[in-house]
Image (cartoon, rainbow over the protein chains, first blue to last red):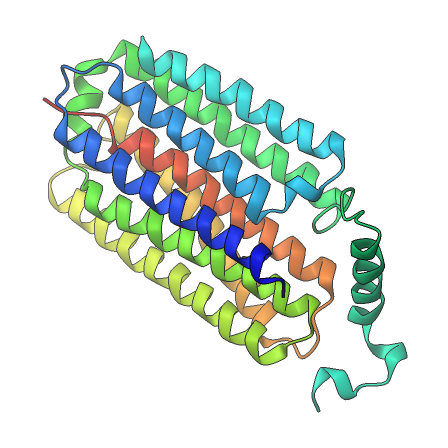
Length: 87
Length: 209
Protein backbone atom coordinates (compact mmCIF):
# COMPACT_ATOMS: atom_id res chain seq x y z
CA UNK A 1 0.00 0.00 0.00
CA UNK A 2 1.55 3.30 -1.06
CA UNK A 3 1.60 5.54 2.05
CA UNK A 4 1.08 8.66 -0.10
CA UNK A 5 -2.03 7.18 -1.73
CA UNK A 6 -3.44 6.12 1.63
CA UNK A 7 -2.72 9.56 3.05
CA UNK A 8 -4.71 11.26 0.28
CA UNK A 9 -7.87 9.34 1.23
CA UNK A 10 -7.39 10.15 4.91
CA UNK A 11 -6.93 13.83 3.99
CA UNK A 12 -10.14 13.72 1.92
CA UNK A 13 -12.00 12.05 4.81
CA UNK A 14 -10.73 14.75 7.22
CA UNK A 15 -11.89 17.46 4.81
CA UNK A 16 -15.31 15.83 4.49
CA UNK A 17 -15.73 15.60 8.28
CA UNK A 18 -14.54 19.22 8.70
CA UNK A 19 -17.01 20.39 6.01
CA UNK A 20 -19.82 18.48 7.77
CA UNK A 21 -19.07 20.08 11.14
CA UNK A 22 -18.61 23.54 9.58
CA UNK A 23 -21.93 23.34 7.66
CA UNK A 24 -23.73 22.16 10.77
CA UNK A 25 -22.16 24.94 12.93
CA UNK A 26 -22.92 27.70 10.41
CA UNK A 27 -26.52 26.54 9.87
CA UNK A 28 -27.19 26.33 13.62
CA UNK A 29 -25.40 29.58 14.51
CA UNK A 30 -26.63 31.92 11.80
CA UNK A 31 -30.32 32.63 11.94
CA UNK A 32 -32.92 32.39 9.21
CA UNK A 33 -32.07 36.00 8.31
CA UNK A 34 -29.06 34.77 6.34
CA UNK A 35 -30.79 33.52 3.22
CA UNK A 36 -27.62 32.41 1.45
CA UNK A 37 -26.62 29.98 4.18
CA UNK A 38 -28.99 27.21 3.02
CA UNK A 39 -27.92 27.24 -0.67
CA UNK A 40 -24.26 27.50 0.43
CA UNK A 41 -24.63 24.46 2.70
CA UNK A 42 -26.21 22.52 -0.19
CA UNK A 43 -23.41 23.59 -2.55
CA UNK A 44 -20.88 22.27 0.00
CA UNK A 45 -22.85 18.98 0.13
CA UNK A 46 -22.49 18.54 -3.66
CA UNK A 47 -18.75 19.28 -3.46
CA UNK A 48 -18.55 16.60 -0.75
CA UNK A 49 -20.41 14.17 -3.03
CA UNK A 50 -17.98 14.91 -5.84
CA UNK A 51 -15.01 14.24 -3.53
CA UNK A 52 -16.54 10.90 -2.41
CA UNK A 53 -17.00 9.94 -6.08
CA UNK A 54 -13.56 11.03 -7.18
CA UNK A 55 -11.48 9.66 -4.30
CA UNK A 56 -13.53 6.92 -2.59
CA UNK A 57 -15.29 5.50 -5.67
CA UNK A 58 -11.97 5.89 -7.54
CA UNK A 59 -13.61 7.78 -10.40
CA UNK A 60 -10.42 9.77 -10.88
CA UNK A 61 -8.98 6.58 -12.38
CA UNK A 62 -12.13 5.69 -14.36
CA UNK A 63 -12.66 6.10 -18.12
CA UNK A 64 -13.36 9.68 -19.20
CA UNK A 65 -16.97 8.89 -20.18
CA UNK A 66 -17.89 7.61 -16.71
CA UNK A 67 -16.06 10.48 -15.04
CA UNK A 68 -17.88 13.02 -17.22
CA UNK A 69 -21.29 11.42 -16.63
CA UNK A 70 -20.73 11.70 -12.90
CA UNK A 71 -19.43 15.29 -13.17
CA UNK A 72 -22.50 16.20 -15.28
CA UNK A 73 -24.81 14.69 -12.65
CA UNK A 74 -23.12 16.77 -9.93
CA UNK A 75 -23.33 19.98 -12.00
CA UNK A 76 -26.97 19.50 -13.14
CA UNK A 77 -28.47 18.46 -9.79
CA UNK A 78 -26.08 20.67 -7.81
CA UNK A 79 -27.06 23.81 -9.77
CA UNK A 80 -30.78 22.94 -9.72
CA UNK A 81 -30.90 22.37 -5.96
CA UNK A 82 -28.65 25.33 -5.05
CA UNK A 83 -30.75 27.70 -7.21
CA UNK A 84 -34.03 26.37 -5.81
CA UNK A 85 -32.69 26.68 -2.25
CA UNK A 86 -31.65 30.29 -2.96
CA UNK A 87 -35.12 31.36 -4.15
CA UNK B 1 -6.16 -22.19 4.45
CA UNK B 2 -5.05 -18.61 3.71
CA UNK B 3 -5.83 -17.21 0.24
CA UNK B 4 -2.22 -17.09 -0.81
CA UNK B 5 -1.76 -20.84 -0.29
CA UNK B 6 -4.39 -21.71 -2.90
CA UNK B 7 -3.22 -22.88 -6.33
CA UNK B 8 -2.90 -19.99 -8.76
CA UNK B 9 -5.62 -21.24 -11.14
CA UNK B 10 -8.37 -20.97 -8.46
CA UNK B 11 -7.29 -17.56 -7.23
CA UNK B 12 -9.54 -15.16 -9.07
CA UNK B 13 -7.78 -12.23 -7.41
CA UNK B 14 -4.37 -13.01 -8.86
CA UNK B 15 -5.13 -12.08 -12.46
CA UNK B 16 -6.58 -8.80 -11.30
CA UNK B 17 -3.69 -8.21 -8.98
CA UNK B 18 -1.22 -8.86 -11.78
CA UNK B 19 -3.32 -6.75 -14.14
CA UNK B 20 -3.25 -3.93 -11.65
CA UNK B 21 0.46 -4.29 -11.07
CA UNK B 22 1.15 -4.26 -14.81
CA UNK B 23 -1.11 -1.30 -15.30
CA UNK B 24 0.45 0.68 -12.48
CA UNK B 25 3.93 0.04 -13.88
CA UNK B 26 2.77 1.58 -17.10
CA UNK B 27 1.27 4.49 -15.12
CA UNK B 28 -2.00 3.59 -16.83
CA UNK B 29 -4.49 2.90 -14.06
CA UNK B 30 -6.68 5.50 -15.77
CA UNK B 31 -9.46 3.71 -17.58
CA UNK B 32 -10.36 1.24 -14.84
CA UNK B 33 -14.11 0.98 -14.18
CA UNK B 34 -14.66 0.31 -10.45
CA UNK B 35 -16.93 -2.75 -10.12
CA UNK B 36 -18.68 -3.67 -13.35
CA UNK B 37 -20.04 -1.39 -16.11
CA UNK B 38 -23.64 -2.57 -15.57
CA UNK B 39 -23.51 -1.52 -11.93
CA UNK B 40 -22.97 2.08 -13.01
CA UNK B 41 -26.30 2.13 -14.88
CA UNK B 42 -27.95 1.36 -11.54
CA UNK B 43 -25.76 3.82 -9.59
CA UNK B 44 -26.38 6.77 -11.95
CA UNK B 45 -30.08 5.81 -12.22
CA UNK B 46 -30.50 5.63 -8.45
CA UNK B 47 -28.64 8.92 -7.99
CA UNK B 48 -30.92 10.55 -10.59
CA UNK B 49 -34.05 9.23 -8.88
CA UNK B 50 -32.90 10.77 -5.60
CA UNK B 51 -31.83 13.91 -7.51
CA UNK B 52 -35.42 14.29 -8.78
CA UNK B 53 -36.68 13.87 -5.20
CA UNK B 54 -34.24 16.60 -4.02
CA UNK B 55 -35.60 18.97 -6.67
CA UNK B 56 -39.21 18.01 -5.79
CA UNK B 57 -38.56 18.65 -2.10
CA UNK B 58 -37.20 22.15 -2.81
CA UNK B 59 -40.04 23.00 -5.23
CA UNK B 60 -42.61 22.05 -2.56
CA UNK B 61 -40.61 24.04 0.00
CA UNK B 62 -41.08 27.17 -2.14
CA UNK B 63 -44.84 26.69 -1.95
CA UNK B 64 -44.99 25.94 1.79
CA UNK B 65 -41.91 27.68 3.13
CA UNK B 66 -43.20 28.44 6.64
CA UNK B 67 -44.42 24.87 7.09
CA UNK B 68 -41.08 23.43 5.93
CA UNK B 69 -39.07 25.70 8.24
CA UNK B 70 -41.29 24.92 11.20
CA UNK B 71 -41.28 21.17 10.52
CA UNK B 72 -37.49 21.05 10.10
CA UNK B 73 -37.19 22.34 13.69
CA UNK B 74 -38.58 19.01 14.93
CA UNK B 75 -35.46 17.25 13.63
CA UNK B 76 -32.29 17.08 15.69
CA UNK B 77 -29.27 18.16 13.55
CA UNK B 78 -26.97 16.45 16.06
CA UNK B 79 -28.34 13.00 15.12
CA UNK B 80 -28.14 13.79 11.39
CA UNK B 81 -24.62 15.20 11.76
CA UNK B 82 -23.30 12.27 13.77
CA UNK B 83 -24.84 9.90 11.21
CA UNK B 84 -23.06 11.80 8.41
CA UNK B 85 -19.70 11.37 10.14
CA UNK B 86 -20.50 7.70 10.85
CA UNK B 87 -21.16 7.05 7.12
CA UNK B 88 -18.09 9.04 6.01
CA UNK B 89 -15.98 6.91 8.37
CA UNK B 90 -17.55 3.71 7.04
CA UNK B 91 -16.69 4.85 3.51
CA UNK B 92 -13.04 5.34 4.43
CA UNK B 93 -12.97 1.84 5.99
CA UNK B 94 -14.47 0.41 2.78
CA UNK B 95 -11.80 2.18 0.68
CA UNK B 96 -9.15 0.51 2.85
CA UNK B 97 -10.99 -2.84 2.63
CA UNK B 98 -10.85 -2.72 -1.20
CA UNK B 99 -7.10 -2.12 -0.90
CA UNK B 100 -6.88 -5.16 1.40
CA UNK B 101 -8.76 -7.30 -1.17
CA UNK B 102 -6.34 -6.21 -3.91
CA UNK B 103 -3.41 -7.12 -1.68
CA UNK B 104 -5.09 -10.41 -0.65
CA UNK B 105 -5.02 -9.52 3.03
CA UNK B 106 -7.98 -11.47 4.28
CA UNK B 107 -7.76 -10.53 7.95
CA UNK B 108 -7.42 -6.84 7.17
CA UNK B 109 -10.33 -7.08 4.71
CA UNK B 110 -12.55 -8.71 7.33
CA UNK B 111 -11.58 -6.32 10.12
CA UNK B 112 -12.15 -3.22 7.98
CA UNK B 113 -15.49 -4.47 6.63
CA UNK B 114 -16.70 -5.37 10.12
CA UNK B 115 -15.76 -1.83 11.16
CA UNK B 116 -17.82 -0.46 8.26
CA UNK B 117 -20.68 -2.80 9.24
CA UNK B 118 -20.56 -1.47 12.82
CA UNK B 119 -20.93 2.05 11.34
CA UNK B 120 -23.92 0.90 9.25
CA UNK B 121 -25.60 -0.59 12.33
CA UNK B 122 -24.89 2.60 14.32
CA UNK B 123 -26.56 4.60 11.54
CA UNK B 124 -29.64 2.33 11.64
CA UNK B 125 -29.93 2.51 15.45
CA UNK B 126 -29.66 6.33 15.43
CA UNK B 127 -32.20 6.58 12.61
CA UNK B 128 -34.73 4.39 14.42
CA UNK B 129 -34.16 6.50 17.56
CA UNK B 130 -34.82 9.63 15.50
CA UNK B 131 -38.00 8.19 13.97
CA UNK B 132 -39.37 7.34 17.43
CA UNK B 133 -38.41 10.83 18.63
CA UNK B 134 -40.17 12.54 15.71
CA UNK B 135 -43.29 10.38 16.07
CA UNK B 136 -43.31 10.95 19.86
CA UNK B 137 -43.29 14.71 19.20
CA UNK B 138 -46.60 14.25 17.40
CA UNK B 139 -45.55 14.04 13.74
CA UNK B 140 -46.85 11.13 11.66
CA UNK B 141 -45.43 10.17 8.26
CA UNK B 142 -48.50 11.71 6.59
CA UNK B 143 -48.54 14.80 8.83
CA UNK B 144 -47.66 17.33 6.12
CA UNK B 145 -45.63 17.65 2.89
CA UNK B 146 -42.33 18.06 4.77
CA UNK B 147 -42.82 14.87 6.79
CA UNK B 148 -44.02 12.90 3.75
CA UNK B 149 -40.69 13.82 2.09
CA UNK B 150 -38.74 13.25 5.31
CA UNK B 151 -40.09 9.74 5.95
CA UNK B 152 -40.05 8.71 2.26
CA UNK B 153 -36.51 9.92 1.51
CA UNK B 154 -34.91 8.75 4.76
CA UNK B 155 -36.93 5.50 4.61
CA UNK B 156 -35.73 4.62 1.09
CA UNK B 157 -32.21 5.64 2.12
CA UNK B 158 -32.44 3.45 5.23
CA UNK B 159 -33.43 0.52 2.99
CA UNK B 160 -30.26 1.22 0.97
CA UNK B 161 -28.23 1.19 4.21
CA UNK B 162 -29.77 -2.16 5.23
CA UNK B 163 -29.00 -3.70 1.79
CA UNK B 164 -25.48 -2.29 2.05
CA UNK B 165 -25.06 -3.83 5.51
CA UNK B 166 -25.96 -7.26 4.08
CA UNK B 167 -23.49 -6.73 1.20
CA UNK B 168 -20.72 -5.68 3.62
CA UNK B 169 -21.42 -8.77 5.75
CA UNK B 170 -21.28 -11.04 2.69
CA UNK B 171 -18.01 -9.45 1.55
CA UNK B 172 -16.51 -9.88 5.02
CA UNK B 173 -17.74 -13.46 5.44
CA UNK B 174 -16.65 -14.88 2.07
CA UNK B 175 -13.46 -16.89 2.06
CA UNK B 176 -12.45 -15.46 -1.29
CA UNK B 177 -13.54 -12.17 -2.75
CA UNK B 178 -12.99 -11.24 -6.39
CA UNK B 179 -11.77 -7.68 -6.84
CA UNK B 180 -14.68 -6.55 -9.09
CA UNK B 181 -17.16 -7.84 -6.48
CA UNK B 182 -15.44 -5.92 -3.67
CA UNK B 183 -15.27 -2.80 -5.85
CA UNK B 184 -18.98 -3.11 -6.69
CA UNK B 185 -19.99 -3.36 -3.04
CA UNK B 186 -17.71 -0.40 -2.27
CA UNK B 187 -19.19 1.76 -5.05
CA UNK B 188 -22.72 0.98 -3.82
CA UNK B 189 -21.75 1.83 -0.24
CA UNK B 190 -20.15 5.14 -1.27
CA UNK B 191 -23.38 6.00 -3.13
CA UNK B 192 -25.34 5.41 0.11
CA UNK B 193 -22.88 7.78 1.83
CA UNK B 194 -23.26 10.40 -0.96
CA UNK B 195 -27.05 10.40 -0.80
CA UNK B 196 -27.00 10.95 2.94
CA UNK B 197 -24.58 13.89 2.57
CA UNK B 198 -27.23 15.76 0.53
CA UNK B 199 -30.19 14.53 2.63
CA UNK B 200 -28.46 15.87 5.75
CA UNK B 201 -28.07 19.34 4.19
CA UNK B 202 -31.60 19.41 2.75
CA UNK B 203 -33.55 18.16 5.76
CA UNK B 204 -31.51 19.26 8.77
CA UNK B 205 -29.49 22.33 7.86
CA UNK B 206 -32.02 24.97 6.93
CA UNK B 207 -31.19 27.83 9.33
CA UNK B 208 -34.09 28.57 11.64
CA UNK B 209 -34.67 31.98 13.18
